[in-house]
Image 1 (tube, rainbow, N blue to C red):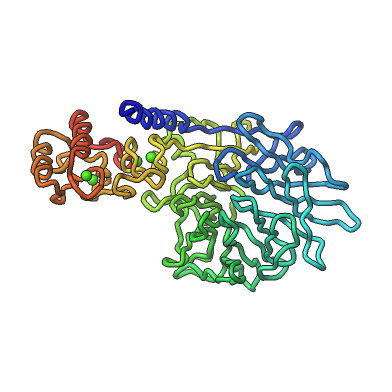
Image 2 (cartoon, rainbow, N blue to C red):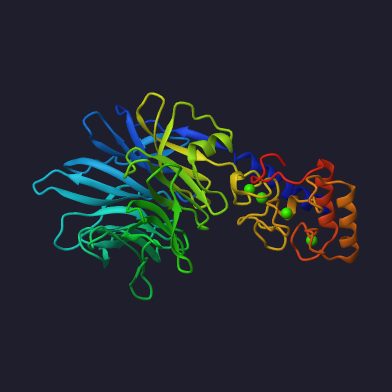
Length: 457
Ligand SMILES: [Ca+2]
Ligand SMILES: [Ca+2]
Ligand SMILES: [Ca+2]
Ligand SMILES: [Ca+2]
């Protein structure tokens, strides 16, 4: 039994590492089309939805999975449908979007696709509804219908606030929080709505030092972090990250750019993606990825230089959505043939601890949000040298791990306490045999790491 207990976790780790490799996959377009873009990805990163367009500019919603490829969302075409777009998908594969019905009277109708397509009811007095987002659990749909609304399943919409220009753009995993805004008020305004025990509307404010004009475009699974764009001091849009403690904070633009928007945020609020442009719109932009440690980076450069992928001939125009763990990113790009095409990128997380290799201070040791160290710490780093304790055997900061570090370790080992050098490598609060084993691994390598924050350990 002891043997079996010892071997099982090891096999599990190997299996997780094997399915977590990096990839970049162009998604093609629906039959007869040569233009597509992705708008949403399921929280587990397995289903992508978006829009495919033909030469006559007719839009069709698509869903894409690795096994089935790209297929139309609608197989049961609604009467008089001239256009459809798919915007988001829940964990259990429910898809939401909008379809345009030719008149008279012409109508824009929100839909929910489960096994068949169901039309979501409008608010009274309007013929316009768009379903923009669905909660991870599939219970609530956010969108617009003469104001910001949510639909509890396929029931009548619940009014959250605003006028015709208001809408919901993001929803928390359980449907308790919504984010969105009002696009004329007189300037655009970002809000977060909480729907229980009663509906409350929170104005997210403006960028510090900036001007009025903000829109919220997504919200984290727990509802705590909202992202979107605000107006910076130069009068142009800048991607923001908002939480209750820090308020609205700009996360920057790519170098020499004058405009950025944040489109999605991972469940822990730690990874954000969006678009950044040298002009004042994201029509001709570059996709970015952001985290607090690394700041804003060009996503294509990150995929090539950190994750070893080849994107020759591609321009990534914008990243539109993220899986909950932040490891799957979808968006639109221009392919080597010069055509717009949807894509999905997967970031490697070597030891499946919930932090991608590009944002992990111990790439090969679990010390992230999914698998913290034995003390429950994330990225524990006593000497703040950007090697996490789990992989930092260099106690005397000589850039190598040798007999001097061993002697320092022994002193702490005998005292069973970390003297402040980081000898409590597993973070459990004392210095024992497990720390010794971690030290030995590094000692045999002769160096700390690998850490994503040191290109040459
Ligand atoms: Ca990791
Ligand atoms: Ca790690
Ligand atoms: Ca360290
Ligand atoms: Ca320890």
